[in-house]
Length: 538
Image (cartoon, rainbow, N blue to C red):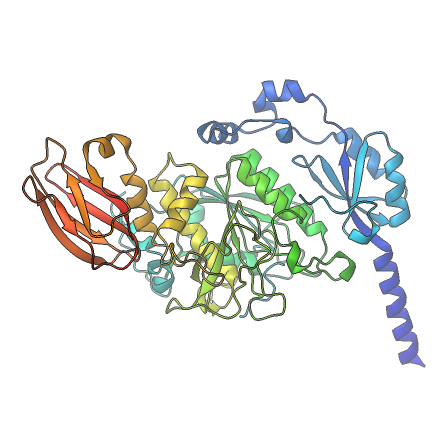
C-alpha cells in the first residue's frame, strides 16, 4: 500500500510539473530606440562600441534593452513567472500553465507567443546540454607538462613562443558552474594579472558565480584555456581575460537554459567581449514535449542557435563544443553547434584520431560543414575545483582548448575580423580540401593560420607574383625588383616542410608536379623580409 501511494504521489507531482509550460513572449516595441542608438554609451560599454566599430558592426535596435515596464507588468499576470529576457529577440521567457500563458496574447504589448512545446503553438516555431555526456614580454618558453600534447596538437605552443598568449582578448565562458575558481592555485596567475573578470549566475540570479551549484564542469572547461601550474599545466590562452556566466542548471534540462544562454550572450556583447566559449548543447529535455529532432539541427530552429548567430552578427567569435552524441542514435551536433555562424569543435584522441563519442555532421546542415574543426577531447587534461589535474573525455574540452588557441591567434592578428579568423583556422586544418562529418576540416595548425593571414598583404602581392594558381606542374615566380635572391620552403597543411628551393633572376620556377593535390604554403626568406603565400596543387 505504501509503495502504491508513493507511485501515485510521484505521478501526481509529475502531472503538476508538466502542467507548467515554458514559452517565449515576443514584444511589440522598445522604448527610446532612436535616442539609445544615437547615444550608444547609454546602452553599451565603450569596449563594446569599439569592438563593433572595429568589426564594422552596426549598433541597431537589437542592442536596445527590453522595456522594463512590460517585464514588470508580466510579473503581475496570474500564474506567470518571468524566467529570462532577451533584447536581441525582444522576448521574455515565461513559465506557467498553457491557459495562463495564452491569456498573455490579450496584452497590447505582446506580439506573439512561442511555446517550447511546439504542439501548443498555433503556428510552427520560428524557423526559416551541458555536455552532460562527458566521460570522465619575452619569448615565453612554457613547460607544458600534462597539456603538452593538447597544446602542441594545434600548434598553439609556437604562438606562445612568439609571445601570443591571448593577452588583450576577452572571452565569455557559459557553463554550469565555476566552483573555487576565485581561490584555486591553478588560477592564481589569472587573478594576479587582473584577467579573472566578474561574472554572473543567470540561473540563481546572483553574482556568486564561484559557488558550488552541484557541478564543476565550468571550472574544468576554464582550466583548459586559463589555468597555469608551473611546469605541470598550461592552458591554451593563459593571458586572455575571462568573464564567467552560469547559464546551465545541471539538475534538470529545460528550454529556459537556452534563454539564460542568450541573455548571457547579450551581456557579453554589451561588455565588449571578443569571444564566447560554450560547452553546452541542447537537443532533448526532461519533458519530451520540448524535444528537438536531429533534423532541427540546421541553425534555424532552436532559440539558442538563432541567438548564437546574432552574437556572431554582433562581431563576437563564438566557439562551441560539437557534442558527445556520436555513438548514440542522435549522432549529429546539437544546438548551438549547428549554427553555420559559429565555430563547432569535435574531438580527437592524443594521436589525432576521431573518438566515437564526438558528434558528427549530418544532412541537416545544408551547404555547410559541421563540425568545423577538431582538437583533443579524448582523455584531455583538465583541473577540477580541488586543484587536481585529471583526464576527462568530451568535446566539452576540445572546444575550449581550441577557443584558447584561437584567442592566442587573434592576439597575433588584432585587425582581423571574426569571420576572417574562422576562415584562417579552417584553411590551416589537416583536411581542408577533403572535409568530412567526423573531423570537419580536421586539426588546425594555428601558427600556420597566423602565417597564412600575415601573407595576405596586397602591397606585397603586387610586388611578389607567382602563377599559375592553382598549379599542375611548374609554379612560376616573379621576384620584386629589389630582391635578387630568396630561399623558399614549401609546407603542407600540417606545417611539415616538404620541399626547399632557391630562386634568383635565372631560376624562377619550381616543379611541384610530384606533390599530391591540396593546399600548400610557400615561405620566402630574403635578407630584407619573409613572405608567405598559399597555392593550390591540382
